[in-house]
Length: 493
Image (cartoon, rainbow, N blue to C red):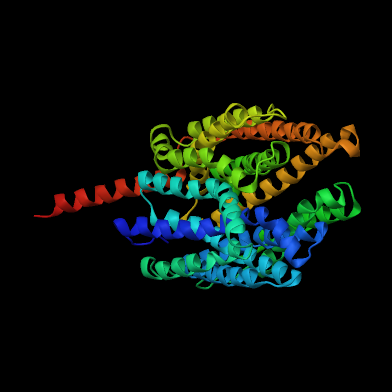
């Protein structure tokens, strides 16, 4: 399903869609800076406080695939508006929360709304922009929002918490959500899905959602419960069994939630593998570098946000223009591989950042390389994940690539944080929190993050095709249309 919007209206619609996505991306990180204030106000213990973050991640990761497929079946705009409404109302509940239970429950509902918005927004953009050059530019804007939104969230979270209170990190979503809803009604046509005669694959939806939620739960609690504990291993085993059941169901059901033939498309499969590795590296950079700046160099929350600004500005410069031109000239494979290789170099620079480091000498060079790498690589990776897919499956493909990012990021961060903690504690528990021990642990995490990014570069560079089946199909259709027009002109008197 393509949306018949022309001219500037499409670009206005893109801006509105990206504003909705930005809200979702911001809320994955904006809360981190405010956690100490939330704990003091609502009386959270150290172990209970983690659920302010985990409740959001749990439902967000669990419902991405289902949200994408519902968009394909019942209309992308309808699901996007439903997701924005749910997310905005949940943000209001978070902002007004006066108890631990209310805040954690509202965060879980936020994650559900965020999953739906994230899953269908990419397919909406792909269907708005069908011409290759314009699609590359539009994906650059989307990529900038996704790549830069996390670090913007740290800056905004520090500002709102310092100037007002932690409640406002959630309440700020209300005017944005209302504006996005109204603008989408005005700009996007009410396109229908293709649910005519199709039933939602309830068994598939149940098994994959339960599998993803259990996997996310096991991952985000792995450090606390222990990676080899009965709880963690048991949950992962159950998640894998449910995933196996899901694959069996999808191979047999008439109208599957996720047609397995999608993974026979080489670019789709490769882009999702790259997405898992890249997300693990990006999460390592973002979260571990924020910890290094705060706990080793002694930066305040607002200073941490400002430290990420160079990377954000560089990402914006590449994502909003230069990356699209690179894709048009070199295709998706070379920019992806080069961008991820530069990101790996940036992480290697962080892996040597000293205890008494200085911003210009020890932080800025890595930030610059990571900003360039993310700005160059994100656009071609998303194009690779979506461009081989038929429009009727675009919501599903969007949900899959978002799930790959979510699972890769959560698993990568949990593993790398465990490696960092183990390294920091290797000199004894009493020395584990000293700047030298912390820096030593962070170095290990950055090193493995660099390895993940380098692997992603190698996989993408070796396996991605220069072109896409979807682009080829469009060109063949255009040629057929031209031939038909010529024949009709020749036959006319």
